[in-house]
Image (cartoon, helix red, strand yellow):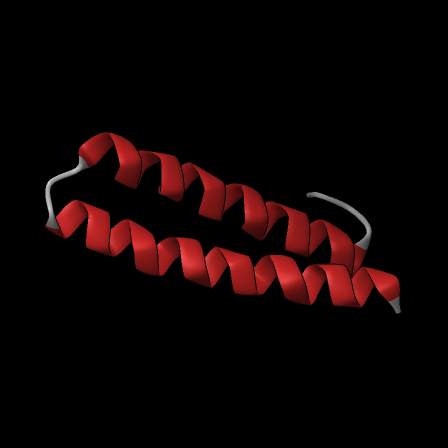
Length: 56
């Protein structure tokens, strides 16, 4: 139960990071956009790990 809640939370945070990343790239803030891209990827990996219990 707690793993699925954590996975859902990190998946939502990944979507938020992707939305902010797009806004940063539109304003040509490349460094901040790249930081949010890496954060979204990390959140995606964490949500997969929380749901399935393994990374790859």
